[in-house]
Picture 1: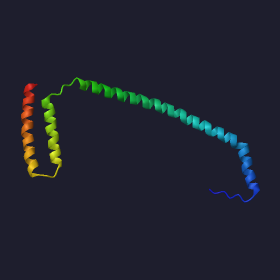
Picture 2: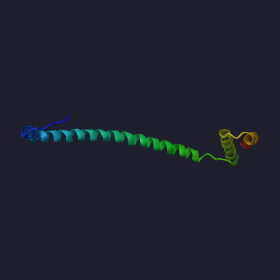
Picture 3: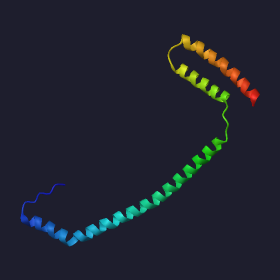
Picture 4: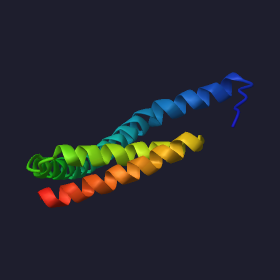
Length: 118
């Protein structure tokens, strides 16, 4: 919306309007902004509560993991599984196929020995 003020009379009308209603408009805007800020406080409390619950859940899970003992056999098994996934994601075939078969044999041996130790 473009205003074209062609004479002093139009400008005087705008100034008179702002003089008469300007303070009320500004106060109304301030009240609206204040109400909007108050509603954000409730949202922040709700967010903080959910965040606190999430942090406590993570702490509980970490504490439960602290009691788990990881053996060398478990680490070796996971390492071989990771290496096999990496080999399968590559395009080289001949050498990697031999290594994949070797990894499968090692995994089966380690899993057997791991079950015997437990």
